[in-house]
Length: 147
Length: 142
Image 1 (cartoon, rainbow over the protein chains, first blue to last red):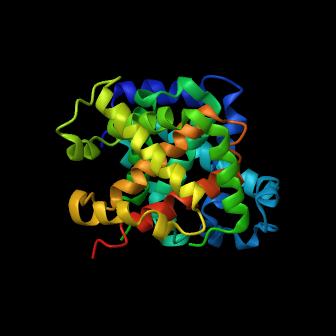
Image 2: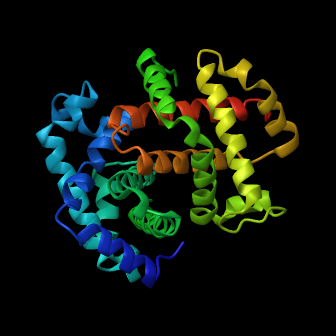
């Protein structure tokens, strides 16, 4: 799936539009660890992940989550060449971090749920469809350099 | 994946809050699925899939009713969903990947309409529940 101009406009507007967005979106990686606990395997050194509350309050996870979302946002600025934008990160996730690309798809879907949670009715089917294309594109780009 | 006591409690509480809106949410989830994942429309080529379609509305109600039944019998999903499981295995034969897509859109719909209820823990419980229902519905495929 290719994210086109409409998707770019809508997704960038949602992600960078208002200050109120940032806290919700930043919680996506934390929510990932709660909803799909096996993703915690990459964060064994991050301290207490024993409950939903512990995870949502964990400052190391929060900091890492911020890093991830900032990369995501930066990558979206090159939405016409996601594979190029995420090439180095793709190599990192394969060669150094050894992350199964399925995790990128899981995070993408959690991000969509968080956006729905935040925006409510504004997150209509058409907006969701645009975002599904974007997260699929990012997941695909991050998996592109795997070997 | 096993539904814990907390999961069952979360699902029952959330579904209880939905009440009579279940049919509307079933319909919206279907609409989202067709819009976001166009390949799913291949199973409904005989339907009018335009916004507001009576056929989609009726089908959304059917999906919601089945989920309401599943919630009511959450301790014995295989028995409660046995007839639906047969239907999907021998007649409908919807590829298993599509259950994940509809489940995701059900989560998105609930997140939109019930932000207060859609905490991380409830999100997890609902995801597990839809996954458990999907597993039962595809259990007789082969």
